[in-house]
Figure 1 (tube, rainbow, N blue to C red):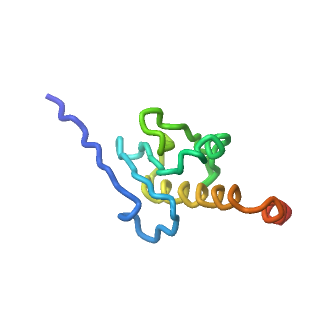
Figure 2 (cartoon, rainbow, N blue to C red):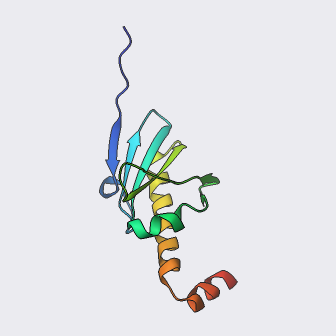
Length: 112
């Protein structure tokens, strides 16, 4: 018979050079398929899932994980699953910083 594929789980502490403060977990669903879970303060989830994250030449849709009100997830395909999740986490961190910054700081970021 056919063997069941393993689902490997990687957390952000296992990804080299991860500089994001947004913790994440990567569920490897195949060689190039994954689901990443990002740990987010619940009050920020509606803001963060409004639009996809652009990185590594693609757009990654985000959705709230209904069972847990602290996570958002992204399903994606990539040849470097863990680094892709780390890049998404960095962009989420930037969005959180922008959201928490003053309107003046946000205006300055948008003008540059």
